[in-house]
Length: 152
Image (cartoon, rainbow, N blue to C red):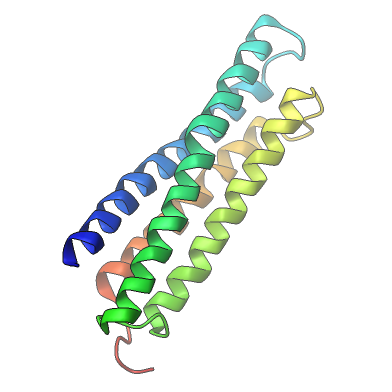
């Protein structure tokens, strides 16, 4: 049974890495795209790159992250390893929901660029690019340190 858990954990980690790579790269594309003239060859190339990155990497990686993560929670609960009611896990879950929200915002930006209706500046996307990094740092810290474990 431990092999099932370790498989889920492996898949979860790989999916998180792919998800984060996409979340960190896509806003950089947005920075360059925001400076490209709508309808130009450069803009059209960015549209293709953004659409493929989001559709082929970010979205599937997020889905696999969620599925494997939820599978691990079920395993924990069934085997009494830890509880989804622990502070660190609840905080992590909330932050992962926020990361999913950032992913949804990126989807909206991809659609806006695809329809040449982006209204955001390159500066906005430079700042927006930092949000997944901050969330990632907080999530990893919670998973590794597990603050207040056993208190709730």
